[in-house]
Image (cartoon, rainbow, N blue to C red; front, side):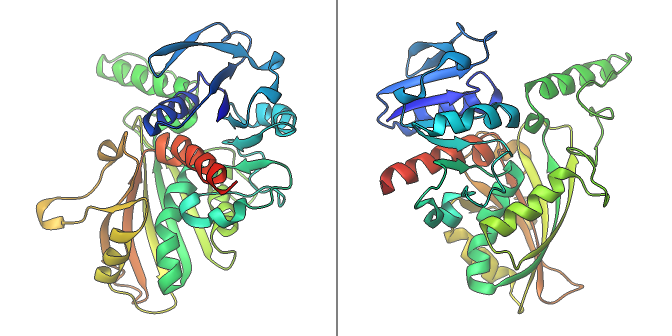
Amino acid sequence: MKIAIVGATGNVGRKIIEVLEQKKLSIENLHLLASKKSSGKELSFKGKKIKVENLENFDFSKVDITFFSAGKKISETYAPKAAKFSVVIDNSSFFRMDPDVPLIVPQVNKQHLSNLKKNIIANPNCSTAQMVIVLKPLHDLFNIKRVVVSTYQSVSGAGKASMDELIDQTKAVLDNKEVTSKNFTKQIAFNAIPHIDDFLNDGYTKEELKMVNETKKILDKKIELTATCVRIPVLISHAESLNIEFTKTVSPSEIKKVLNKAEGCKVIDEPSDNMYATPVDAAEKNETFISRIRTDNSNKNSINLWIVSDNLLRGAALNAVEIAETYYNKN
């Protein structure tokens, strides 16, 4: 494969490079692209140094697949240009709800990779990606009616500057110094902020709406879903509390049995031994971890569970590379 990565110097771009290296794919050429100010920097790939190129001047006819991980404005401008020559896999939100662009999690809906109309494939929001991997096998067997999800999202989902802000604020609090917030609306250190992305007229945020719309597009438009998205002072990995209502009664043992066999899932659920997954446990891991599986005592057809996943890896870079693998193998 001949590959380009737009936004190669960012959190997700660097993680895509790591995943490509770990998977040992046959890559003939790898082009690392970024803004003019980052061009000339060097990043490592398979023991070699590769210079970052200026996105503005790049000839996309050199590559077969282009990953975009530089934000929606860059995707809006450059993805259609790249799609004239290569298959685009876009990590931004810009194309996700375009009816002519498939929104893909390979473990869930890889069948939608056939007949690309715009030569663009969208990668879902990281919080959606880890959730639908769990919901898919359960929906296939037990028919999900409704999902209530509360997310506990790490600061890496907001970029490197937000990670730096958490570290700086934590030091300031511990040193009894003044705390300043640039990337968050409130202090993030030792706090929880129920606000990710902009607020809409109905009181929900865009992040919450993304989870609703993307889940319906990827999995099933009949599933009802409501979300509350919260930013917490964790560097990597998103956690989610799910209440899943089925059309019939399902036992926790049945849920465990299904998820233990599901691709991309790993159940860690032994409460008596304090065995449950946390964000630290999921960091740098490929799987979505499932814990705290139990019956909702207020509704016999509902199950509560807890899921954790590395948002940069499972929720973004790994999913993007798996899309590329799946598409390449199909074609």
